[in-house]
Image 1 (cartoon, one colour):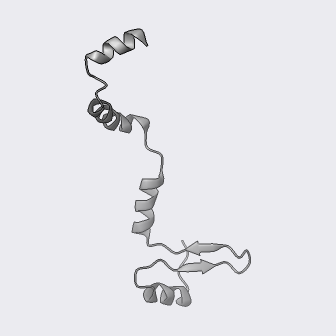
Image 2 (tube, one colour):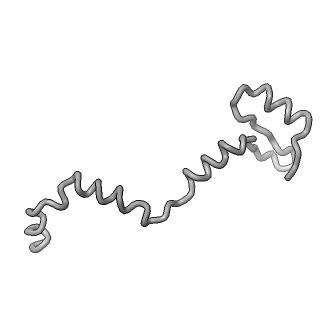
Image 3 (spheres, one colour):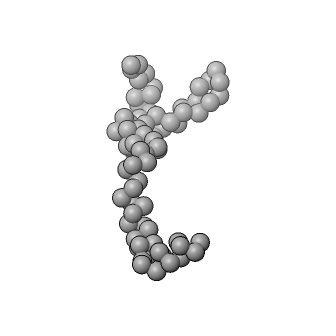
Length: 79
C-alpha cells in the first residue's frame, strides 16, 4: 500500500468530503481519490448479485402483479 504525498493529503483535507480528482501527468487520465469506506460501499453495490439472492424479490414482484392468480392457470394452459 502506498502513502499519500503531502500534496495529496492536503488536497483531501481541503476537499470538505468531496473526493478530489487527480490527473496522471504521463497519461492524462483522471482519477478520483475515495475514502476506503466509500469505495467498499460502491464495490458492494456495483458487483453482480448472486441470482439466488434475487428470487425473493422476483417472487414478491410476480405475486404483486397477480401471476399466482388461479385464472393464470387457464391462461398458461392455452398460451
